[in-house]
Length: 278
Image 1 (cartoon, rainbow, N blue to C red):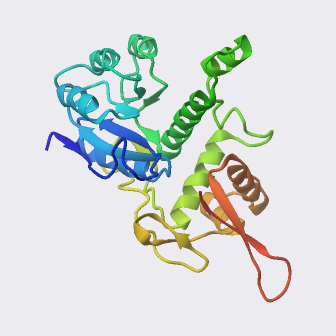
Image 2: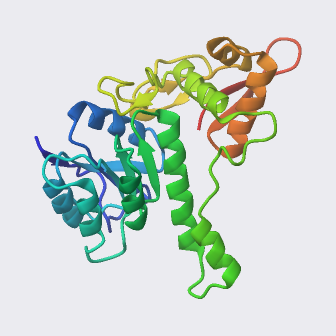
Image 3: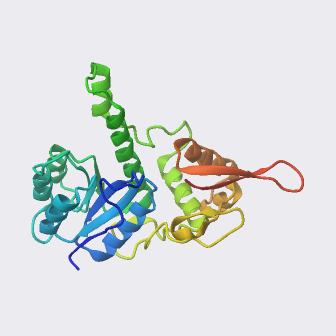
């Protein structure tokens, strides 16, 4: 099937589903499956359609009115940059666009920036990298929702600057690469298996967020399955770092809202903190 629309979520329904409706534009079906899995593992986003070419992307964007489009630039009919320009001509509020592409040429990046993309991810990229961009898209949407009709210069500057990336917010002594490794290890240990954790290559990662195995102290996850939790020692062993370092990264993920922590009380001694993805 070239194009697919999901009917689970719609604008103007009586429910309280405020997730950002996402359209995936990707000509490779295997990559599209990976993109869908990781987008839907994010609690604030839901996929409402998929398109394999530019014409279907424009048709679905007009029919579904998504909040976000994940846009591949290498499409079999209409170039992704042309699709981007035509998306800007659609009536209604402008749709947010994140480029997910193998195009590395400066001219492609420049044109995408001129077309108003919020982020530009070069394939292959990690699941954590996509998750971080989705976080930034959501934060920008929230900033705009809370903004007043009339802004002063400082507020304008803040909106134009956009939310800072999680890497920019890292405390001294923590690295973005190690943070991503800890985050992916936590997901695997808790039953949200990301495979290689790399998006943009066929077979990488498979679908995410669906049905981790049940474990002690787990919480309900996607599809009704239980999501396990993990200790700092378990994460440290999985990544290959000290327990103290793993705990620092896990506590930072909790601060940033990417993880949750729950103390588990044993028969004796201090409680052990257990972590799981937020």
